Length: 366
Image (cartoon, rainbow, N blue to C red; front, side, top):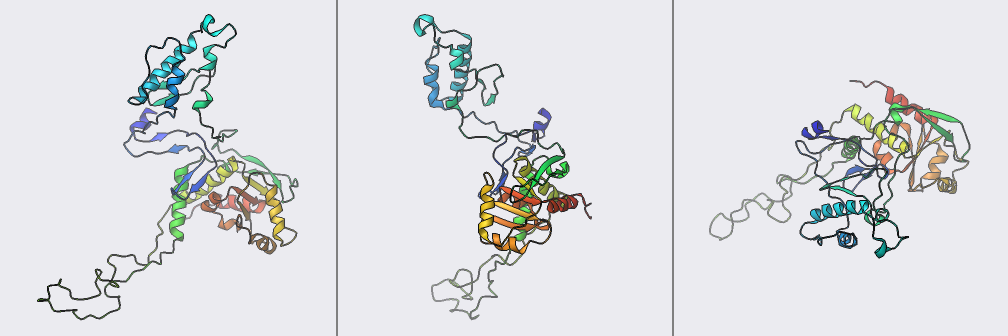
């Protein structure tokens, strides 16, 4: 850990949050825990102050026995936190007075927890100690995986269809569907995709392309005005644009192994969240949209679905989903990282998974 900090790189697991997705406003990936989180080179990670409600500290500390002075949370809030932590630790060890509190009153250790503060850093309390009071914690739920992710273990998944019928099981390769989650790789791949699909048709006219006469507007001297030799300059209305954009390609090169790793990470993230469904096929009885709407409603906690088929898309399925903005259908050859991040649920057929695994195992041509 110390060696990693000296090199300016912190290697460790971050606390898991909600599902992996692409934040279009901040232009970065957000979501599952990251195995490698890199900071700026030759910089120590900036410590995070504990998110404690400072205005509650005086009311909490004022009830503790043996309090000698009042804490000031305005001038030195971190010193107030450290002082409050020491008082809370003392309160756990001491017992309340029976005459003042009562014989059946609970101990202070059951009311006020044993919170450990080390200035800017917070430490988890031991298992045998009391927990942090709920008023000091956030009410936001955090998703925690049932097992350790990124172990390259083969997974067994249930195979169904639109009617939720049991179609057996399928083994998912661990080197494709159980790789360590790295948001930095996902960020690089998504930026590469968005830059590559940018049209780049922006164009402005230079002074030689602007329509207009080439004569001198007025004589050089004697008018009292500034000297000009043309009316097509950038300082005139309707004139040229200096150093403006021209049609170009915004694409940049990205290694094939990085692109392949990004797709593996996106698939592993959806698999770890339980949002990867495997169907035997994507056959629908008719081209009616109401059938797809009914099938999507049966799925739990689903807002946007991506249907991935192995070969060509069925004509009935294409007609049934083209009027739904939250359902998209693509073949396995078009599966990409950005599309996976844009949809919270991925539905893939057996054929699509086999083709994806075969593509991931194909040696990279150099």
